[in-house]
Structure formats: C-alpha cells, structure tokens
Picture (cartoon, rainbow, N blue to C red):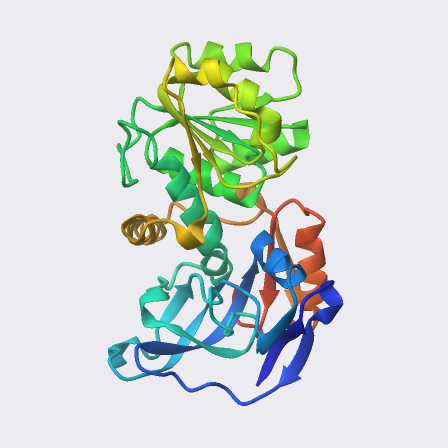
Length: 342
C-alpha cells in the first residue's frame, strides 16, 4: 500500500510516496483504510521544524475511511464501519496520509452513511479546536448543542478560515448570536454562508462600534485567530467576564495585552491547543461534534463557506504548500481515487 512519509524535516519536497506493508493493529488499535486525509497548519509546521525523524513520519492528524481490522480489546463490530479519526499522528508515526493505517480505537468515531468522507476528514482539528474555544468562558456552557449558547454573543475572528467556519457552525447550532470579523467582501460572503448573523470588516475604523451596535452589552466569547493584531478591538467589544480564546498566532506571535482594559471587566485570555487540551474537554468536544454530525447540521464545501481543495495522495507536497500559503478553504488529500463518493 502507498504511504506518504518524511524522514527529515524541511520544505514540502521532503514528503515522499513509498510502497510498504500495512501495519497490523496492536492492542487497543483499529486499522483504517483511508479515503480522505485532512491537512491542517500543524501538519506543515511539524514537518518543517526540527531535525531527523526516526521512524519516518506519516503526516495527517485528521482522516476518514473504513475500519478494516481491530486489535485485541477492541469490539469486532467496528470492522466495516465508516469512521472519522482525530489526532492520528500526535506523538505517533502513523498519520492519515496513507492508504491503510492504525490509530487508537478511542480516536475512531462512527461516521453516518449520509455524512461524506470530505466532512469526516474535516472535523478533527478545526471542529475540536472551535469547540474548546466556545466552552472556556466563565458562566458559559462546557458542552454545545441546541440552546446551550442561547442569549449569548460569540465573535469569530477570521470567519472564512477552517476553525472560524467550524466555530460559526457550532455556535449557530447552539443558538448563539454570531458576529464574524473578516478582511474583505468575499470573505464576508463565506462567513455568512457558514451561518454568521452579522459580519464586520475589522479594518473599518468603526469596527468596534459596529460590533457594539449588535451587542450593546458586549461579546461573551471571542474566537481569536490573530490576537496580536486584534487585542485592542477584542477588549473594546468584550462583555464582563468574557473570554478571548486564542488558537493561532496569525499576524504575529508576540501579544501585547491591554492590561487595565482587561482587568475591569475580568476578561480571560485563554490559549487553546487541541492536542493538549484537558482530556475531559476533548472527550466532550468529540461527543458534541458527533452529535452535530448525526443531526446533519455540519457542512463543508462552497455552500457552507468552506471551499474544498482536493489533491491526490501523490501530490501531498502540493497540499502542504497550499495550506502553508494560507489558501482559503479546506485542503483534503484523496487517498483512494477509485470513484468512491466524497
């Protein structure tokens, strides 16, 4: 079977397609025949930073496919099921950019027949990150679902990105009022397609005033992609006891926090990394995202404000380059090119 690997870190050209035997599932593991592999920014950052890699690394944290075998201690009924997986390559060499791979069975989630492999491979990092961002606010819910964010206002910075899109969808499913900030009319259309109730161009001189007109008492939760650039806007619109959940360093890695403006309303600056978030929070995120998929409320594709960019497995390097170049939308690798419905 074919797998993409890299044995040292660097530019995308370190990624090589090889033929190798499939790994048998060990105790507590499931073997997956992948149809789609999702590409995220952490994939190229992990590939680029550091030195030699031993054993060779198969990239890809997110994926979707069919279970082909299970190891000892795993329910055999899982074999043959359509599934999505999360964190496949976290502290493991077996990622999702291969035709057949193994993953801990606890990270394998059933995918309904009416949910596409495209959706399944898009869920992991973006939606679990978004869930964490939406559930760290004092007085807010620790789980998501209909009614859990009712009467609360969520501001999603960068609503045209993958995590921003996921945050909008999950917040709307949970009955929040959703405002998104974007940088252009085209990205505004994407945020609206995802479900944002209001869109503001953060470059407008009166961006804070526009947001305050929608939320006179302030925003309860801010999902922040670019805190270094947006910190002053965030404190200008935050409600008392609001949280600013920071999941990326777009626009700069050094954050200057407006201290006094943050102290008065007791604003929380919360950093989020899905890989190391508390175990209970991760399990709740998986549970809630699974429920949203079962309810049919999560979408990908142009009509959901998240264009899909497909690459064959042999062009995984190009897929990584697209993400590294900040392509707007979601990058997927078509691991199996056999006409299987997306």
